[in-house]
Image (tube, rainbow, N blue to C red; front, side, top):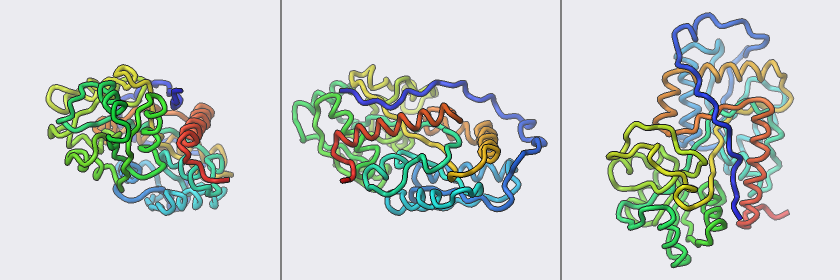
Length: 336
């Protein structure tokens, strides 16, 4: 059986920023009256933290908000600390949180009394990609060739990933469910460590995000076999040798019919008003128009899908069901 994330609509990339975009902004029905706390339910240095701090820097540089913003990491309990902080701040429009897959995996795996419906969805900023990477010396030329090698030697091949019962291991389980292959999953603390372990031959493959392994790819130590999305990445500038991100086939094209993308979205506490939500939607639209954001998206090879409103809520609800199915199949759900 194939498990899929909801395939997001490809929306047009917002037009290039101009100086006029940051000229006198229209009056808002509501805007912050004190410091906005930007919660990151993960540790410093990771993808969510990097994105939050970039956003904070962009807002300050372009004077997009009158009140200050402060980024606060609350990583305890696989992000549960951050989610509970926002859940317990019902009605407070001066608190926002950036999300990743632990929006789903943490409550499902731990049983912590939290669900995304306790929050107010604001916007999908982007979707983070996952790539199947192997060491440069691996003889496999395609994802199917590598999976066939794994299938022929159950448990022999090691998949390195970030954490346990989180997205890297969930993707690994999805591959196993879809193909019949069987990996030995080895968890590490971060994507950078995973890439280093793969370069050193201590694991045989990984499903790192593009930004986590691009340096090793550019250095000729790793090679990408496929991207877990239903379309190729659009970035055609050469990255490693004569290859661009666009040259990496989708996993379906490469013979492994599975896709998985990770949400990079913004939520507010429950009980806020539509006017308050609209303020942040407009704020993040302006952020996405800046050259700094566009450069960050290109370097990280992000899927730049943007969603708000009911469309975003529907995507989140379906993504939750996908995670629930994958985690149930893997035995990762918390005991009831």
